[in-house]
Image 1 (tube, rainbow, N blue to C red):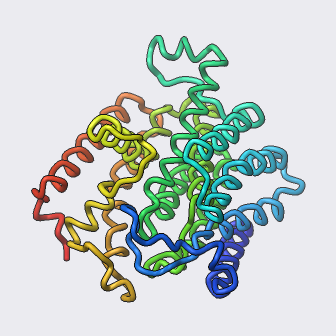
Image 2: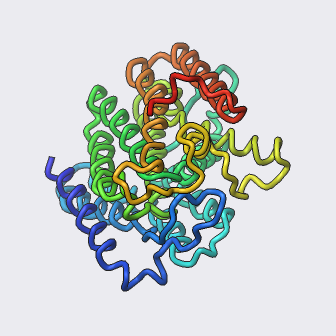
Length: 360
């Protein structure tokens, strides 16, 4: 329990210090680009909230890992996360790091995780595919692709106050719960400690948006969630690999749909930003907000957007928590979740939003 409190309070205190001292570092840390297709705020806000999360998890682990039989793995996981967080923070400060470079550094972190802590996808419970995964090279490549993809997915969904951070907390709680059921104290500890660190940031990000995660925070959290998702399957043969997929259902599906929309439908680079993510459509079409005129209110249109996606996330996470060992059932629920996502998206984008969604 002490590590959870340490992670929360360190993250919380560091985050408020960043907010209170922003006049000193605004030139380097402020999110001053307000007119992009994915910008939904009207004044500059520090985008280095990931520093609080990172320090929260680092100090909590160092304070509690000494003498632990899992000390080496915990320290090594932190080491693997360094290139991921560093490249994201570099982008937050310079605004000049390309998507390809960020993905490359994230892939390096994923490679380190597969080699150094055994975070490697052992199977997919698909005949033929599982045989191919007995080849170490293919298993490692798939794992790197998966971890890098989920890390980037958290950056993609980081568009509104509290969205990415609460999705991470929900997912980490699910991971922690299943880890407790399995008797895996290490993964439970790593899950709940990161959730606590993220919560320390969340209370300053939601609902007012006083600080943003930035690329550093989003990539770090996504990497942590993805790596633990792989580890729970690698360490426990009774856990279905589709559990790891289901608990990350919303960010993964958002990423895949974004790639399809930009590359196939729009004919442009998947790395080029646009303003029609699911969360953007909810903001513009359901909450009827083109600009944040009420940004200074406690619950602006920006803040009202995120709960829609939190609920969507639970539609994937809850079945995963219940049926974590049953591949067939999880596949059915994943198909239902995908159909629900596509149906809702198509209805909203075509101005046919179901009436029950309008809760204002």
